Image: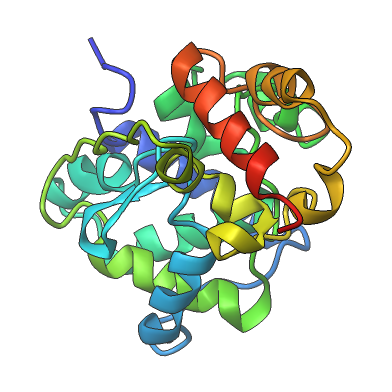
Length: 242
């Protein structure tokens, strides 16, 4: 039985996803990556800024747990001999589409689910939607090249512990990748700027938002303990606007 977050994409699954990649590439989502189209060095920097807070990728030193573990998504496919260029294009299309095929292997959803494949309902298929086009153009090619060059090369990996202090939780749980908070040194733009949004909010308001999510933010109930939610809420309340 496939365990959530611990098993990579098998041959059948990868072939099926590749078919979707080819179809979507012909429907206005953009061209395919080639061996010379991506700059992995630039991709490494961009991955750290835009993706690492949500994804585990051992060689990149990231241990995010909000999105799929990228080592585990591709380790099995590498063993089966899939070419790096195939993986590169899958990553590229995942960036372009947002929540989609790769996420199904960490959420337990079947790849064949019509809800997951239909662009109009794809965002409702997952607990934690990934925004489409988090990087675009040449930057997307660079990130895809970087991920494909290292993901799963060392086998399956397990994300490390997030921590217990508010600052460690804010960074380890992916908050820093989505929000700007000067005290944390974060400049995320996916979610609201907390230095602007939080002043005037109560601790209970922040705890509720972190727990239940909403407005595009994923719920952290079940991902963080009650004590961790309380700690990160208190950290944000005491740090925002300072």
